[in-house]
Image (cartoon, rainbow, N blue to C red; front, side, top):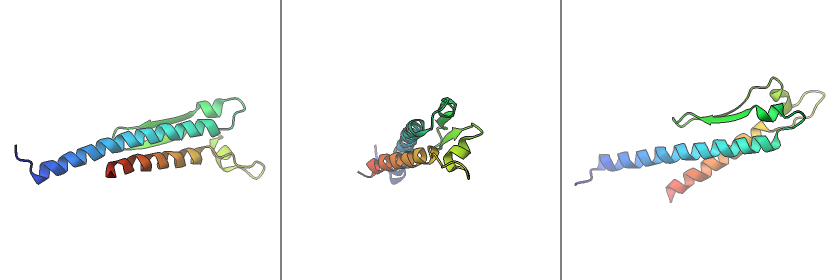
Length: 105
């Protein structure tokens, strides 16, 4: 069978997309792990509401739906910030970037 340029490019594109989905999934899981490690614990409710998910279309997200998560993350005039969300996001970005570098090799 003759391999045409179009089919070769299509295979490369499919493999890259597959790798990106895997990288995003690993990144979301790594970010969620950091969020859970760094979340301040008094009752455990803030930590229990951390979640991360991917949609299978190359998108991932972290969430925390507690009403006071914002204040923990950024602080107030009376309380210093106890950042847990941004370090998780940063870790997720690093993992995704590292996983995508593997494709170049």
